[in-house]
Image (cartoon, rainbow, N blue to C red; front, side):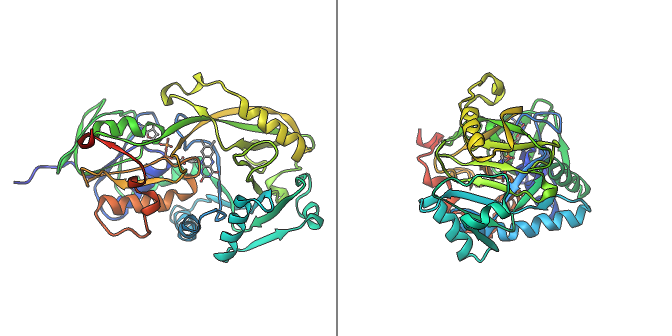
Length: 388
Ligand SMILES: Cc1cc2nc3c(=O)[nH]c(=O)nc-3n(C[C@H](O)[C@H](O)[C@H](O)COP(=O)(O)OP(=O)(O)OC[C@H]3O[C@@H](n4cnc5c(N)ncnc54)[C@H](O)[C@@H]3O)c2cc1C
């Protein structure tokens, strides 16, 4: 007996990961609907804002390998849509020269033959004016890195999905998921049935997964997105070829500090701390902790003498963190036609095209293009209904 379905696949959440998944499914001629709780575009999740860093510099080879293809997929989307989404600036990596983290970055880049320039104390100032390299820090530049135009990328991939016949339903909050050979998804506006479902709900992932009896060890934190004013306009400008940067650890903090050249807001440089304080995604701005801003102020006063050490603009965003900071890409342990991508831990945007491809493969039961073992849920002690 065949049960009627409305779609081959329902994708829940139109952030970067859900949008690329829907696009990949539509490219394979799968009838797909992308459901989003808010009016698009919105600034309530993790994918809003004008810019993100793209880089091959990682501590782990598996991310660098995935980025090789991912750059090509970004370029393909640019060609298809006739839109510029990426600007090469390079990424300056700084950190205590003999620390494990800095050495891992350096070794991964060199092992994978990523074009890299190692700077020494003598030529650092010549290449990177207006930045003070801390005593004992090493510095290198991942030449391939740059800026992704995030808002534009999201609009572009959603537009391409629609051109391929995909359906986007925004202002439709998913309120229930009933697993089965045909999955039923109820929203604030209707009921949909499909052969498979992909959950890419960002900070709301566990709320959606609860309908399927699964909970992941995810922590949602609010990030203060800080913009700092140049004392002399243009000193850190993208047009002056100032790079993106990442400080692995330092005097001020154990977590990364990262930044992008002045670009989206003229005269303002985006510099953020790679950690925040726990929040409820529905009440994000109830979280008012500013200890990350104190850390950034000390860092900027020491390392960026050309910036005023007081943020001119502070916006908000959220990370969804896993304990090991690696993504979750997997099928539900009890229902193989329910797939999820979650826990992108503040570094998932650049991987959007490849995450879309991998989640599409999982939902169609195809062999994965990459080894997914670092991303499987069996690395956690997960709770499922059957285990409770
Ligand atoms: C400040 C900041 C800086 C960052 N910098 C970088 C960077 O430089 N480089 C990089 O690679 N990454 C970066 N990231 C990380 C990257 O942006 C995220 O990993 C990525 O955006 C996560 O996308 P997502 O699709 O998983 O989540 P989201 O964008 O949050 O999308 C989830 C969507 O699901 C929807 N949803 C949730 N529940 C429901 C429901 N019940 N019904 C319908 N819809 C629902 C939400 O409304 C939302 O639109 C940064 C993140 C932040 C916050």
